[in-house]
Length: 66
Image 1 (spheres, rainbow, N blue to C red):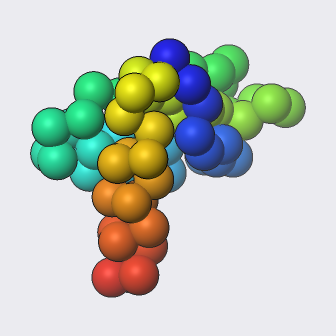
Image 2: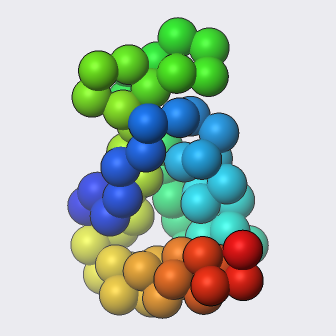
């Protein structure tokens, strides 16, 4: 698994994870958090190594639509 993005808030990472999973790309959110905060290191969005390029494209498209 490779971290492709870091977020300061858990819900931001979860939105990315949901978009990726909707596109058929497995994704995991990891990090130390309390409630909605990501803690000092934030939270990271991870995808399988062989899906990094596709995942970045999905997130880029999502950000352009926002």
